Length: 133
Image 1 (cartoon, helix red, strand yellow):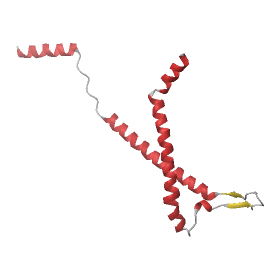
Image 2 (cartoon, rainbow, N blue to C red):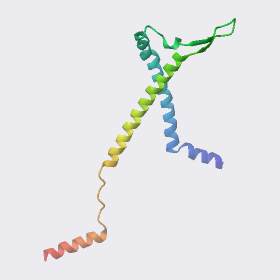
Image 3 (cartoon, one colour):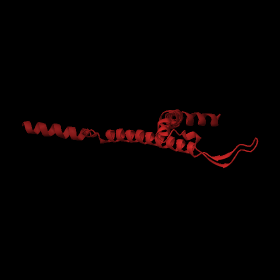
Image 4 (cartoon, helix red, strand yellow):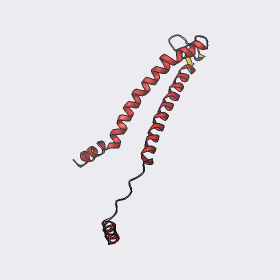
C-alpha cells in the first residue's frame, strides 16, 4: 500500500498535472498547426512556384519493380514537416515570451514596506507624547 500512496502523492502534485495538461494541449496544437501548414499555407505557396504539391516532391532512387515499391527521398514532406516545426516553435516562443513578461510585471510591483514592530510602535507613541509636552 505504501507504493500506491506514494504514486498517488506523485500523480496529484501540481507540476505533474500541469505537465500532463501541457502535453495534451501541445499535441492538439501540433495537429492544428499541421493542418494549417498542409491545408492553408502550402497550397498557395505551391501555386506561386508553379502549381507544385509539396507532398509529391521526391527524388526517385530506384523505380518500382513488380510488386516492390519505388525507393524515394520525399523531400516535399520534409519541407512541410520543417515548416510545421518552425511555426510551432515560433508559437511556443511567443507564449513563453508572454508568460515571462507577465512574470516580470508581477516581480516589478513594489513590495509593501514592512510593518513596524511593536517596539517601534511603542517608541513612536512615546515620541509623540513627549512632543505634546
